[in-house]
Image (cartoon, rainbow, N blue to C red; front, side, top):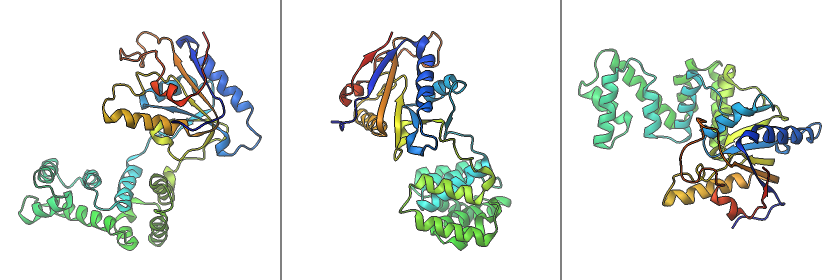
Length: 312
């Protein structure tokens, strides 16, 4: 069962009215914010998929001040995110494989050979690279690049700040000693912070040109439900929550996982929740798929016990 909350509401509206209705609701909610709102005083729109998020964001961003954490990440920051992910959780084969792509001296045929060995022999990319170097499978500049890849991956998994700094200093915008100090702080905070947040803060510190500017506390946050864990907001909105999108085509054990996803989104609110779903969608629209559950509110809404109000 879902926990009791203040009585929220469910609104069902026609597709042609959805932009106007949601836009006005959000504008009115922003106008009621205190002069200096705290982050938790604001609003968040939560979506089961990035497709639905993108659709509603594009429809509403010109009417309402809003932002989304899904911003473009350049190659330099992406490389650091992957490196620090390996540092946070050492010896992840998948992350080692991602880091392999940044070593252009290892030719595509060599990378294919490494991946084949990982799959066939159940070894890590580091171990596969070591074997290929030992038996002559890598030659020329590929040997040097392979050794650099091995040294980087081993340094990251070692969690020794000095070794890591030696390998990634050229990727950053700060001095080596500052980098060592920041890495020490990062490693000591991993147990106390969300890993994704800790990595993001670390990237901001060592590559400040890629840091996002602070978000406007009077703007509406747009997130997927997957990204909402740990978030707290006064108002949660789940626009267009059709059964076709949540749970969608999930079956078996995935149904329970999708139910937990709704529960996470539902419990982000401290005061009120608004859930909408359309009676129909425009022809050719990006959300107008002929899936079972189209134009029907998500089955999890009834489980939540919230009230219902219809608006034509």
